[in-house]
Amino acid sequence: MYPIQFENLYYEKIWGGRALEKIRQNLPSGNIGESWDVALHPNGTSVVANGSDKGKTFGEIIATYQELLLGTKVTAATFPLLVKVITADENLSIQVHPGDEYAQEHENQLGKTEAWYVLAADEGAELIIGVKPGCEQDYQTALTIGTDLLPYLNRVRVTVGDCFLIPNGCVHAIGAGVTLLEIQQNSDVTYRLYDYGRPREIHVQQGIAVTDFTVETHNAKMNPRQNYDGYSEKRLCENNYFIMEELVMTEKMMCTSTPEHFTILTCVAGHALLISDELTVNMTTGDSILIPAALGDYQLQGASTIIRSYPNVG
Image (cartoon, rainbow, N blue to C red; front, side, top):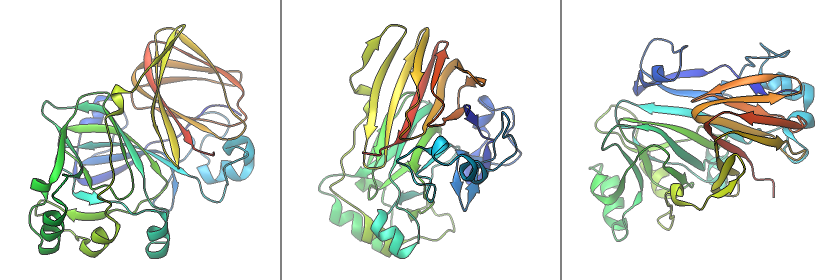
């Protein structure tokens, strides 16, 4: 086994643009809003970009390697995570995602809990996260009659390195001028609640059914950091579906894969070398690498910030 990099799957969006040209050399034409970088979903499946399995689909290498790739506690039937880079020239719709039970019953998919790590933000750029306390009834009335939801929502100004967990049921949106890394459950279910007058479907009844007004979230940028020789480490979030950590390297870091699960490394700043017995991979901002469960020892080198994410297998 070796560290696996996938081709970027790009998607045009009505709110997209060209901001990813700042970190990517392979951007196609159009208003690109999303890049799916580790994906095994009916709406997008990754293709291996490096090594001996180059050109094979993610599904094909899972069928070949099974536990060696995914780990002993991850089922090959449902790959649990989806990794995206999202960039917005315009505000995204205000939306909410269902939990597993509702999504499986109504959409035949998993629910969606996700986490955002801000890669770039224009001055004054915002995220919307949750309904303001005491505004629940006004929010539901506005949603029902189709008026502006913004007065009832928490608007958070963001800068690079800010990180928020967005649990299912949390009303949320990405504002114009933000580029972020998204780690999420492997789902593509979104209920749109308000869309700034765009002529797209609004999911009022579904939104009312799945919104959770008790959800609380915070900026994980302020979480405590542990310092080690050559690097530091910070836990950003842990939930029922995945764990997400930030590694800041000044020199190098020795790592070992775990047989229980795969790991995904995403470079969010700087440049790093990922060195294993089989293959060395260059990582720059926005690059994601899948570390197979059976990879064994590997090393990270170079001044960089890396997000490490993996399924929470208990």
